[in-house]
Amino acid sequence: MYTFKHGIHVLDKKELSKDKPIRIVKPSNIMVYPMQQHIGAKAKHCVKVGDRVLLGQIIGTADGFISSNVLSTVSGKVLSIEDRLTILGQKSECIVIENDGKDDAIEGYGIERDYNSLSAEEIIKIIKDAGIVGLGGACFPTHVKLSPKEPQSIDYILVNGAECEPYLTSDYRLMIEETELLIKGLQCILKLFPNAKGIICIEDNKKDAYEKITSSCNNIANIETALMKTKYPQGGERQLIYAITGRKFNVSMLPADVGCIVDNIDTVISIGNAVCKSIPLLRRIMTISGDAFKDYANVSVRLGTNYKDVIDVVDGFKDKPEKIISGGPMMGQAIFTLDLPVSKNSSALILFKKDPIKNLKITNCINCGRCVSACPINLIPTRMLKAAKADNYEEYIKLYGTECINCGSCSYVCPTKQPLTAYFTYMKSAVRDYQKSLKEKEAK
Ligand code: SF4
Ligand code: SF4
Image (cartoon, rainbow, N blue to C red; front, side, top):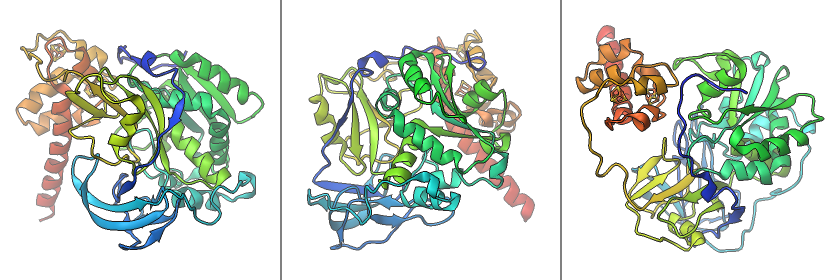
């Protein structure tokens, strides 16, 4: 079975929501669309206050090479363009739309298309227009990722069905419920890469999804499935590529440099929707879970919907939550209010009764080495921590600390509860600034 070296086994809690079919959430009356929902330059608004907009209409255009369109997911009227708090934890420009509930759509919306009749350029343009970004968390614009310098040098399109974060089950539900569209989406991608093989990679805690997909693509020559050992962070790009192909790359390289492109399950399904059904990226599939909720769910939510309206689906809270996480508990981000719009990077909403960090007692490192055994990148977290605490950037660089993928495995296993990952997140950005200032000094 495919796997990578090191990593950890986490209590995954997927049983809470894995058998909950995807339910559709009603969009809010007031929808909010941040212009920054992706890596790269923020989109530039292209509507004005008072305009009537349609379902699927571009309201923010990609502004620069690495950027992405933002689309209206309802029909209605533009109420304002203003700075609002977003899931990224800061205020940024948003378009606020009053939903008229009619869902009047743009021309051509929902029309079936045969991807075989489209050229590579046409497929890339559809993906760009549809505002598709990597839905595994990174939100990198997909049309850019699918346009490497040498498409003929790509050997593998790896579809990341690991979903190794605890609690998350939305990709699992999609693999079961949207198998056909997933395969269609992958066929659309393969049309761009003449020498590539598509491999749908699934952890062995989702064997039913693996079996269903394997039997559905049995007769397709350039698509296979791969069963991977359940281990965290199996879904990390580097771990996935190594597990399936044995190829390695570092922080200064892209997967395309080793002949691979990795796309998440929902990204591939969104490509299938856009290319084959003329339906752009309008919704996120999210898992709603955690011990503060009365019930758990997998939901399809239109982008722009307020989180407060999303949690109505699970009848609200059992207990007032102390901790709210957007995304998975290992790599997601703590948020402090639910009065936020669902964005392209909203993969899950996990609410805990108690904040696991709040009363954490940190004691001295006992040099047990567990963090070293856990690190999937073969780093030495205990020494990196010393360098971080001393703000010793040179030492941190020497220890290859900038290769850290912030997976959280070292913090998870540490018996003395050192906040290793938090230090490394800080150090990576401090080292970037330090290296930039060195370059500027050299240039003077
Ligand atoms: S796991 Fe924690 S206690 Fe053990 S060596 Fe690493 S930092 Fe120290
Ligand atoms: S957070 Fe960084 S140092 Fe810690 S285990 Fe993950 S990659 Fe290694």
